[in-house]
Length: 358
Ligand SMILES: Cc1cc2nc3c(=O)[nH]c(=O)nc-3n(C[C@H](O)[C@H](O)[C@H](O)COP(=O)(O)OP(=O)(O)OC[C@H]3O[C@@H](n4cnc5c(N)ncnc54)[C@H](O)[C@@H]3O)c2cc1C
Image (cartoon, rainbow, N blue to C red; front, side):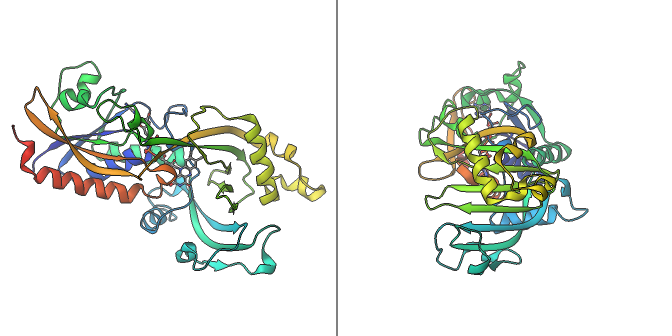
């Protein structure tokens, strides 16, 4: 078996899923170069730990549903639950969510005030920080390795590998996979100016009594949502602000989110309060674990998933670089499909003649 060494940048959900796919395929020795590890404190340059996350395409759903089964490979990362989606305005059926298990349209008389339409179904939510750690541990257990480092220019990896970045001598690299999310805008050699942020702000509450998810889709596409996690936390949101780079939570947005979610889901307030009186926003304040915001890595023109050949001048060769970034608000739901496409692209690139000496 030929052992090839490829590098994946970085430890977001896209990078980890891709690295795992390559490593488990066999035949590759994969190293991740990571600025941040999933267990590090959350920061604005690393979107994945901030995500909800719930909505999934069917391919990803099937894989995660199996992982979430009692006794399944990653049961603790997921919560299986009933989800209800309400819309402020009438929706033309069929709803794409009709394919979800137990999907049922809600009759007009059972809608909550202000909703024109609704659908309910069974799905799962992801405890995103936990799931990232699960992906990393499975990657390491299958023989992958990881080096911490910030890549200034892609040539640093092509010419020197991870060892050069960590202060050692150069090591041979056969391919690179770029999963740097929004960082693709700044990464030397890539500098993709089509990348832009869509900022999302959330609040994490401790409310273990809430075991179902609810979303209200407003007329302008803004979503108010509650996403319970297995551990009893509920992440509530949200906002969709294009080109907003602001790196910390804005207090006025937190207030607005809490107002909106309490209207959507009064059950967020502790049961003893609801038994005594109407809940108020102030009742949610003691439940706050964290206010957060993340920058969804969006790209004008959509996800970039393609091969670009880079010249290794000193090594007198060309090296395939697979780009896999720009997943916007869909990085979790498309992570498994994107990883499969990245693998196909890499294998096709290795079959080309041009990677041999120029
Ligand atoms: C509030 C919110 C809710 C969301 N809800 C959902 C949802 O329900 N479903 C869903 O599918 N998606 C959701 N998303 C979107 C999802 O989080 C993103 O699509 C996904 O996290 C993108 O992953 P990524 O791996 O591409 O990027 P990231 O997670 O940002 O990872 C990129 C990594 O690359 C590193 N990096 C960048 N440049 C360099 C460099 N030069 N050198 C070294 N390292 C570098 C960064 O530090 C970072 O660690 C949500 C996002 C937010 C903010």
